[in-house]
View 1 (spheres, helix red, strand yellow):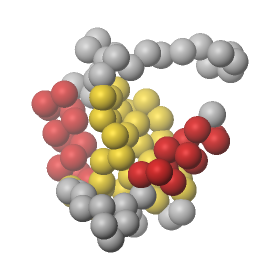
View 2 (spheres, one colour; view 1 turned 120 degrees about the horizontal axis):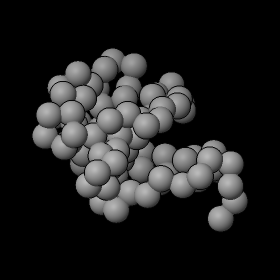
View 3 (cartoon, one colour; view 1 turned 45 degrees about the horizontal axis):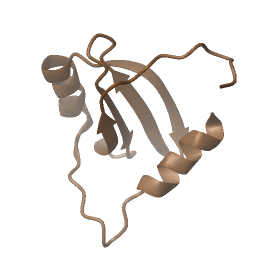
View 4 (tube, rainbow, N blue to C red; view 1 turned 90 degrees about the vertical axis):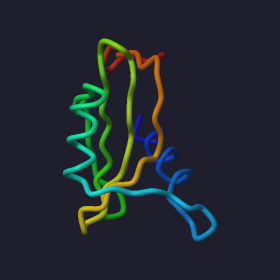
Length: 91
C-alpha cells in the first residue's frame, strides 16, 4: 500500500510544464465538507508535504491532495466510485 501511495505521489508532483490550481488548505477543507460532504479517511507525509484523502462514503466521491508547509493545498486526483476494502487483506 505504501508503494502505491508513493507511485501516486511521484506521478502527480507538479513540474514547470504542468500548470495546477492550488488552494488555501482551510478553504479547501471547507469546500470538501460543504459542497461534497467528503470526510478525511487518511493522511501521511511525504517529502515534507501532507497527503490527505477525503471520501464521501454515500456517493463514493473522493479527493486526494497534498499540502505544502506554507498551507497551500494542491489536488492530486479526484473521482467517483470509491470502495472501502478490508484492512490488512491482500487482493
